[in-house]
Amino acid sequence: MANILIVGCGGLGTRLAHVLSDKGHQVTGLKRHPPAHDSQIRYVAADIASDIGLDALDTNFDQLFFIVTPDERTESDYRAIYEAGLHHLLAKLPQCPWIFVSSTGVYAQSQGEWVDEDSPAEPEAVTNQLIRQAEKQLIELNPDNIIVRFSGIYGPGRESLLRMAAQSPAIQKEPPYFTNRIHHLDCVGVLDFLLEQRLKGRKLENCYLASDDDPAPLWDVISWLAERMHCAPPAAKAVDQDAAMNKRCSNRRLKDLGYQFRYPDYKKGYAELTDKGRPG
Image (cartoon, rainbow, N blue to C red):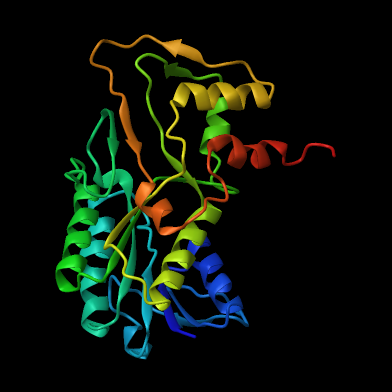
């Protein structure tokens, strides 16, 4: 069994920690404000941005998961995590292999293109540039480090599209505006799966794009949700000929490795959310 460090124990990190602990791994969670009690996880209270508390952290970990979300979508908060925080962790744990949670926001493609791990990742927003910079730094330091780019995460507590569908919004219908998503349980599943493959000694790539099988147009998703929720359908928004079509994310590399999605499309995942609270 492995000695695992999870940096950033929010919803995803905490669930992953429990999954790994149940499998017999020794799990340490690094969090600014740890819970008062969790019998499965050893917590260390630390702030990677300021370096406060990192002196109490062991250095003998077999694997580090980086699952940190900045407090706000501001350049300063992203620099605190992806520049200062990264620097402090690498100084503390220079030899530890990483699985780094990134985002498909590092892709700037916006005309309906398919993207995969080999597609150009040249983001325009400074926040995504900082994530991309961190990706490059980790791979340059150790080519065996792994980047996992999640698309839009949804699930219980992440229900923004349900709220949108309930408001009968105006949405671009033509050309189709493609959206990409992954259920939060598949996020945990992917990270657990990659660790399992690494511990089995399989040769892994240094980047995986993690998104479900169905990069569907937003119009289709909201229309389906509205019908299922018994809400008025969306209205087609007038758009000009240069309207963006966004991008479509391919998960082929991850599936070729053997990962099977628990929620392969939005209908499977959102059906559980829309059925929540309905009489049985």
